[in-house]
Amino acid sequence: MTSISFNEWDLEKHVADAIGQLGWEEPTQIQVEAIPFARKGMDVVGQARTGSGKTAAFGIPIIESCEPNSSTQAIVLCPTRELAVQVAEEFQSLQGKKGLSIETVYGGTDIEKQAKLLDKGVDVIVGTPGRVIDMSKRGHIDLSKIGIFCLDEADRMLDMGFFPDVLWIVEKMGEREQTLLFSATFPQEVLDATEEFTEDPIHVMSEDLEVEVPEIDQFAIKVGRLNKMWALGRIVASMTEKDQMLIFTNTKRMVDMLGERLDRQGVDSASLHGDMAQNKREKILDKFRDGSKKILVATDVAARGLDVDGITHVVNYDLPDETEVYVHRIGRTGRMGRSGQAWSFVSGSEIGQLDKIANTWAMSIPVVEAPDLPKGTKEMARLKEDWDEISDSFGMVTVRVSVGKRDASKLSLSDWIVKQARVPEVAIGEISIGDSESTVEVHMKKASYVIDVLKSREFEGRSLEPAIVS
Ligand code: ADP
Ligand code: MG
Image (cartoon, rainbow, N blue to C red; front, top):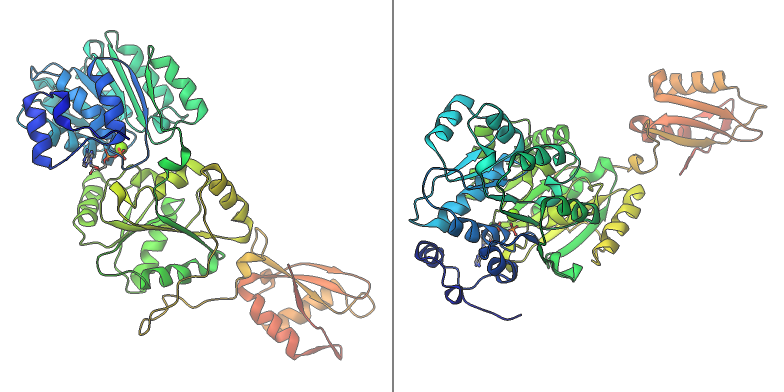
């Protein structure tokens, strides 16, 4: 890797000064490779891992190309409002005293106010597709005159969710001169889609998959749903004063539930998901950024691309379905070469998915024991018998008992269990009576109790010898 300094580029003074102010010593690899081409006005497709400085890789050339004249010259699209805000902030610090008006345009904010701002004239728009389309339909953005088009997190912007919106916008940009697409990953179908938007682009890609993956310690703990809280407690207990943790769940509902559970355990945390009002989300993020909140629970959408330097721990409370998402998540820690650790909770049935993630990115994610509980700390949750691991999708656990059709019928067996164990009938599922043994489905919530009862009493004068079928 050749190291070069920002000075060699002879950047315009405002930008050079701003970079000096920021204290940046040298450009990052993606900046070294992308900026010279982007400055020439060429199309660039740039890929580099999260935290490698992609924002400035497109930000510096965009700022240099624009003049403060209140006509929109560049538009940057991002998948979330938080990212739009973050990119706009980075643009602001990079332009120094240049005086460009850089505005964010995203949903959830006052339309009238935004319309007025846009009508006054802005030089650079950083926005999310939905609101940009809305504003252009209302006549407050004239896409046809904008020369520079940029997609941040292009993999997401060109996937099924956003693709139609992005296409709509691009098609309106009749005078588009330059297109810049940046992302941490470019799956093949996204790479194919970039062809639609670019003309002879320069591809800046890190060839080695391993370099995209942050160099942090990754671990998995094998736990079922019931014991995730317990495992989380162990990791939280291992954190030091300075550490910060970002916990990912797969659903908004789970974000709320986990936030509440942590609260009940006296563990202070904040939650972030896409259904929250914009100003609330920003407040929460500020608290996480300034370190007054140590733990943030979030969905992928809400946390995507978030640039918070202090994150030392990423926890996949739920394992993501897509391998790229995993890399995005763990990229929240170990930023700019800092150290970090990522923990994933996997159930028995998810081990395959974990292997797939590890193999795709040539990473090692060993399955380990949960960290020991430091002396003097309390468990956050009790380690429960992990029925979850052996139950079916209805939560039923199959128990084998040693009576057959000579001694029992479905009805007699189920009546007896309900009566002896005093469990509601719905806790007992299918019963199948065999020649010399039978199986009974018991809901996992009652399973350990029912088994204890079956062990201690006799059915028609004989011991049932209950055993779990896994
Ligand atoms: P990415 O978009 O690739 O995930 P960002 O653009 O968010 O990464 O950059 C990550 C962090 O690195 C930001 O805080 C940014 O200000 C900082 N940064 C970017 N370029 C440099 C540089 N050349 N030197 C030092 N810090 C940098
Ligand atoms: Mg980024």
